[in-house]
Length: 375
Ligand SMILES: Nc1ncnc2c1ncn2[C@@H]1O[C@H](COP(=O)(O)OP(=O)(O)O)[C@@H](O)[C@H]1O
Ligand SMILES: [Mg+2]
Image (cartoon, rainbow, N blue to C red):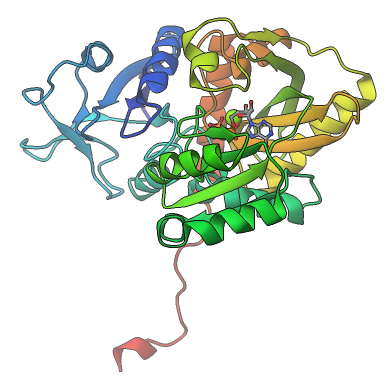
């Protein structure tokens, strides 16, 4: 190993409803990475899926520039190159990568697909692996695993978009049989509240179904939890993760929708959340259980509802690539615990390398006593 700086690829953009959110997260990450330790390689994925590695990739995507004339690069699913290749080039990697930070929220970035490519390419990466990422994105299967781990989740039912279009009345009947309004209608696999509708009655339910179906093949219907506070906890680590202090979100809208999260700038985050010590400990314990239940690694943010009167704690979801701007809850909670944004990135990179080394040490082959397969 030479003593050159670690080459860190930061991937952003992507084919997701959270493309723009990713650009903002990535800008903070690119800004905070310690240049005395890392050589940073920005990797933008345009809305059409094209990969770009120009130093201006972030700017190009932000300005929605036509990128068709930019040099396109790819990551090959082959473990000996470990870097970006120019599509029409000679076959030499233009930028070997030591580690990647997939800073893409949502589909094709947070859902295990990008993680699968990085596994094949044998490049260490920050955050959960293929399984944890896929489970972290899927609001239906994730809930089933949480229940199995003994955690309380909102009452729910789900349907495929085929059910929703072909047998709408049956779906509505099932929703109304199992849940009370308001009901949250959500695509199973999105984030940032994209495609989520809060239905207060049948009319709004019927209007929400096609919205959710336009984002995913499966839709989840959840009992709206009323009169609850939204509490979040950051998790950092691999097999024995640390949990942060808790934060509380005060959404500016009726629920924490896309505008309340990013656009109107009126939602508030309270750090640390004002809660009794016992409640804090209980939520932190639940966060660790949830993290383990879906096989997370590196980082995640666990989100909860806390009944104002009942004190009941319900887990809402786990985000494996949480918002990462300098004012986002995930890094802010660590900052409150004395870990700066840059130091957090150092820790995440170290965790990625640790996990990769652990996996690299596993046996991949089995040598049978006889060459029976040649017969
Ligand atoms: N079952 C529920 N009861 C009450 N509020 C909910 C419920 N589900 C979602 N919400 C509201 O909608 C927001 C977004 O839902 P969430 O499931 O977290 O989706 P996303 O993955 O897009 O963040 C939550 O932060 C909360 O404000
Ligand atoms: Mg959420």
